[in-house]
Length: 367
Ligand SMILES: *Cc1c(COP(=O)(O)O)cnc(C)c1O
Image (cartoon, rainbow, N blue to C red; front, side, top):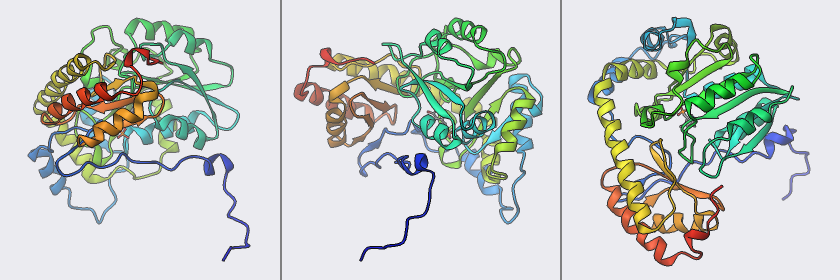
């Protein structure tokens, strides 16, 4: 039977958006390398802090004050220059909504974080994208040239998800000098802890230097708390106040706040884990290159294979080997650095891909 009644009226640009699709889960003997998660089990001390946050019949502290008090001195700022959100995705949404709406433009490099286009569309603003450089990094001079009088937010992702390249400190300061001082720049540093390139921009070093710069960090990747949803912003109080005003109140839960504080107390153990992931990143990249696959230089907890037309084929072969990865058809495959045991499987899968590749890797586009 067909329903004759007219469908509910929705904003057409929202109805056209694909609903969020989560990466497939891996088989019991496989590995989930599709969401850049931390492969290590949560630390006991953090689990204890979560278990102790028992007053869940009460609303949490809306301002996450205790956590902000721990974060502020790490960046040499006051507590009101720190803003905590339910993951840095929700912070991105708050800042975009605070600064941009219908008729405005939000500028970013592409390909970059999958969440950006949808967040911009929901705000009512329009996405303006500038293609990545051939090495997968942002083309900041081209981005500065793409700023118009309608641009309200620029998203700079370093290291860039999914290509892995960084913006250098030099490129970033030239960019900040080139764009208007009243244009909000969000430096998305979700993978900052994995960076080992001395030339890379470091948000930490720029705090207080620009009235229009906000730095976004997350507990989801290096700190291993993806499931609890916790991120934070460092920036000028007035700009953070606007994000606070655009936030859904009380969305950062008490157990998440407690876990974040406990994670900071266990920093040394977590940093040691990050070192393992960084070493494994080199091992994985070298192995994939040796097998004959194209792999970009990455400063994140993932590597990018610019396989162009062969991306889906490669992801299917990886899947057959029990490795769930993230394919962007026609573009590339992103492989998260996961458990130590996943590396041997990756090496086998890489050989299998190269032996059966429909087109030769040398012919792949790198954009
Ligand atoms: C993973 C990621 C985030 C962080 O997401 P959370 O909401 O904090 O889990 C933000 N930006 C980029 C580029 C990411 O890859």
